[in-house]
Amino acid sequence: MAGNLIFFGIAVEASSSEHSAMTEKSVVLTFFRDIPMSHPDLSVLALYNPACGDNIAKEFFKTHVLPRLERSGIIPSAIVATEGVGHAGTVVVDFLKQHQGEVAIVLCSGDGTLHEIINALAFSYTNTTQRAIPFVLVPCGTANALYSSLFVSTSEQDPITSRLSSLEAFIARSKPKSLALACTSLVGGTLQQNPRTVISVVVTSTALHASILKDSELLRKDMPGIERFKVAAQQNITRWYRSRVRLLPISSTGIVQVYDADTDDFVPHQGSLDMSASFGYFLSTVNVDRLEPAFRITPLMSRIPPQDISLDVVIVRPERDPAFTSDTPTSREAFARKTGAVFAGAYQDGDHIRFRYRQDGDMGEYDSGPAVVEYFRCGGWEWVPVGSFALVDLHDQAYIVLGRGR
Image (cartoon, rainbow, N blue to C red; front, side):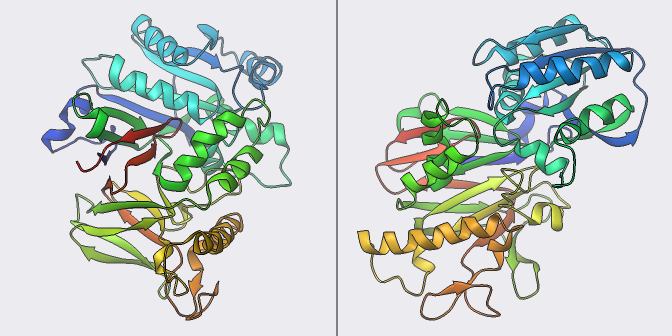
């Protein structure tokens, strides 16, 4: 089994043959920021997911979003509440088929609903000409990673106003900005005959993060907020995942960029970069520097913005700890506390990427020593589990894939 991630932006013309099937769709996905533009004859779909997050989307839409649209003279061509998994994608695809001119989608939901729509557009929507599909994001989900990264709010900001930044930019006729997408394929094992391909707009992960996403869904009913992620983390934090990993070079440069804490910048590594180890944490992101408003897991995405088509990868390997001697329940419990400290650092404005080990295994923001968190910028990655199963999260779904090898 191999989890092979090939990253590309649909808005960018692809040059290699393996991208052709996707670029034939010619759909440019965008979100609204704050550069003036005009959109005179626009058909607007207003879509909300009443079941996302803590179930506030319906009330927020009717109380704040719809009245604001009406006051600005924008009357949606359709208003739809999603009715279940996959419904949002079906609604959007049908709307695009019915409206051939310019469109915009006002989406009151979380990242998962946007994920559904993007995959429906990628695999169910056929269009012969390039077509921009602007999204107006109104964050009503649990973590709202994409919105929180694009519209960073402050504690002083009114919570209602902070949710309406994208809507206000749309009303002000702002220019949309293209989103980057990641294409992930799962092959081998039980998927040998029917590989699974999924498009992601926020995160693709395996190891601990994928386990957290999978188990947190079981807690959603009783814990609709982000606290369920912390509970799921504690349930899985002693698990390690033995795998072979290859980080693929950025296509335009032929290099993998490796973050160097000494220079606080990336340094080039020519060609692919291979690892074979036990992984505690393995996560890649596009478009976002955080997975929750305060959880900046890939802070360099915004602090040192990528100049090429690439993704940011964060890795924690327990065997890099100078205190590691052997894989035992005791050593896993000890390292779990260090993993918890890494998460705490991510909540401190991304300080975790500055953590280093001392010779005795103690970790902190020291001036020298091996990095606790490895940070890369690359063109893609391959994940080949060495054990009997692998868990890979494709943003809103986690897959347990059985089998060995490719």
